[in-house]
Length: 394
Image (cartoon, rainbow, N blue to C red; front, side, top):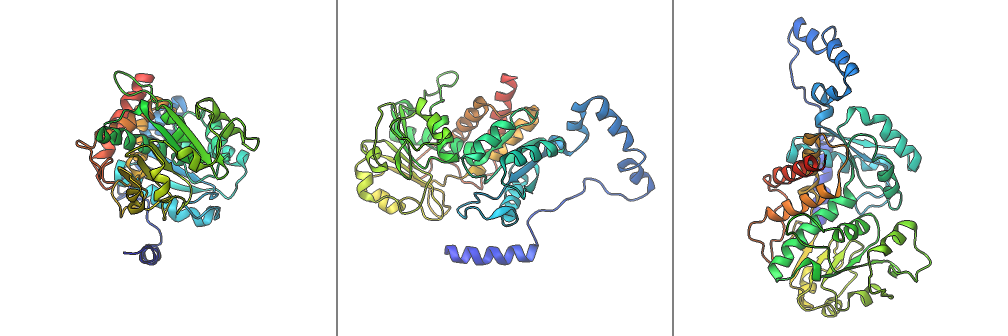
C-alpha cells in the first residue's frame, strides 16, 4: 500500500469514527442507590478524604491512571506548525496507543497558544486531574524551556519527541553493537538534526554510565544542524545548541555534515529526507550503523545505504525492518512512573527503559535490533524496569 493509499483510507476512517477515542464508564447507574454512590450525596466523602489527604486522589479518582497529551500544534509530525485544531488527530492517536499498550487513560489537550509562558501556566492549572503530562509536537527550542519549567509540578512531565526518541535509539544501538561486535564506548556517532530529538539523543548517548556492568557513554557525538557541525567556532548557535558543546564534538571538528560523517561508526538522521547517498556511507567507518528516521522519506533509503556498505539500517517506517518507533517506549515509561507514584522521570528511569527495551529482543539480528511495535509484551517489560528505577531512586 502506498503512502497516498494510507492518507486516503485514514481520512475515511476518521470521518467514519468521528475520532478514535471515547469516555467509557467503569460502573453502571441502574437505580437511585447507585446514583447516590457515584454522585451526590455519596461522592462528598471521597471529596472530604482528598481534602484532608491530597495523596488519596491517586486512588480515589482517575488521577492515578491518567495522562494529558499536550501540544501547541507548532511541530506536528512532519507537517510543521499546523496549529492546535489540526493537531487533534495525532494527539487522539497517541491517547489510543496509551490505552492499547499500557491501559492508561489519556486525553488530547491541544492548546490554542504558542506562547511559552501561557503553555506552562495552562499545564500547571490542569495538572491536578492528571497523573502525568506527555508533551508532544512542540517546536524547539521552546520545548526545552517548557519541559524544564514543568518539572516541579509533582507529576511526571515527559516530552516524548525528545526522550522517547532518545530511548528507542539507544535501545537500538545497544542491540546493533551486539550484532556487529562493537561496544558503545568505542562509537563515534553523527546526528543530523539539532532540534528537540537530536539534542535529547545526544544527551542520553553521553550519559549511559549506568549501574553494574552496563556500557559507558559513547566515545563521541557530533551534532549537526542544517548549517553543519555544532562547534565552538559557530557564532549562530542558540542556547540549547551551545549547551551541547560541553559533551559533544570532543575533537572540535568543523565543517559540514558530510565532513562529520567521515570515519564515523553511526549515522542518526532526525532531519530531512533524501539527504545522503551511498558515497556518504562509504566515507564512514567499515560496516556502519545507519538509523535514518526522517518521515515519510528517510535521509537515505535502505537499499542506497546498503549499497554504500551499511551493515545495519533502521528507519521510522513500518515497511522496512528495524523500525524506530516511540510507541515501544512511552506507554511503558508512564505506566511504570504512574505505578511508582513518581514525581518526575529521571535519567535512571530513561536508561532503565532503554535497556529493558533492548533486552526484549532475545536474539538481535541485522534485521531485528528492536521488537515489532505491535508486540504487546514489550510495554510491561519497560514499565517494570521504569518502576524499579523510580522506586530505587525515591
